[in-house]
Image (cartoon, rainbow, N blue to C red; front, side, top):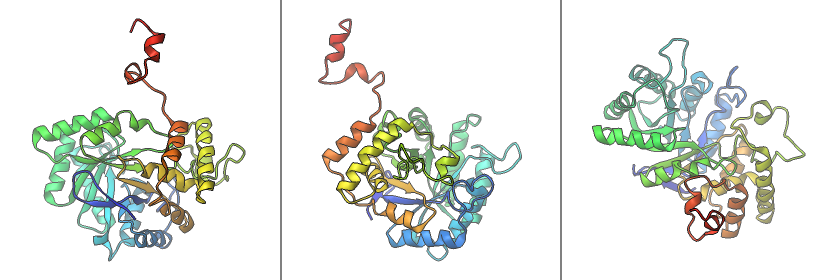
Length: 341
C-alpha cells in the first residue's frame, strides 16, 4: 500500500481508503448497503491487513449507524486508523438540526465522538456548503474544535473552487485553522473537478480525497451496453452519481481492453487511473463483500503506461470550455477560423 501526505499536515494516509456508506442500512440508506457489525468488521480487518489506515464516514450515513459500527470495528485499533467524518446534513426534525451553524456543529461533533467511541476525530469535514450560515461562523466553530483537541484537522467536501479559496482567505485573515483537504467526486466518467477544483487544491497544497471513483459502481465492469446489471444493483435502484451512459460505455470499452491486456479487471484499471493522477491523495472505495474489497485493493500499485493513460484520457476528456479554448498554446486553428481574434 502506498501512502500520501494529506496536504501540508505531515499525516500519511493510505492511497486507498475504506468508505462506510454500506454500514448500517435502514429505510433511506439501505440502498447503499445494510452491513452489520460482523460483516463490516470483516471488511475493516481485511482493509487494515492490506495497509489501509484511512476510514471515511459521515454522521448522516444510516442516521448515525455507520459511525457507530465503524467505531466498534476499530475498538482496540483506534491508534492505527485515520478517521474522517462529516457534518452538515439533517440529523433530526428540528429547524436547527442541520447546517453549518456553531450550534449544529458543536452538537454534532459530540454525537459523532460518542458513536465512534473516540475522544478525537482526525479529519472533520463539512459535507456540503451551507447557504444560510456565514463562513466565518462555521470556520470559527471548527477552529475551536481543533484548538480543543476534539478534532485534529478540518476539510471541505463537495465545494467548488471559488468557495474553497474564499474559505482559505477567511481563515488566513482571521488566523484560523483552514481546510486541509477536499473530498470530491472524481472518476473517468466525471472529470469536472479538473477545471477549477484540482488547480485550486494544487495551488493551495491541499489534499484531494476522492469519493465514488467508480461512479457508483458503473465503472465496475458489470455494466455494458447489453447488460445493465442485476435488479438489486445500486444503479438499478438509484442513478447516483448521475452518469452519461453513452460516454461511460465508450470508456468501459477501453477499460476492458486494457484490463484484458494486463490480466486485470475493469474496476481495478478504472481505480488505477484515478490513483495515477498526481493531485489525488486517497481514493475511497466502498464494498458490501470481501471479494469486492479485494478487487479494489488490488488497484493499489498499478502503474498505467503512458499509452494506456493517453487512451483513457482521450476517451474520457472534457469538452474545452471558455476561457480555456481561445488560449491553447501551439494551436492556431481557432485563430485561423476566427480571424477577428
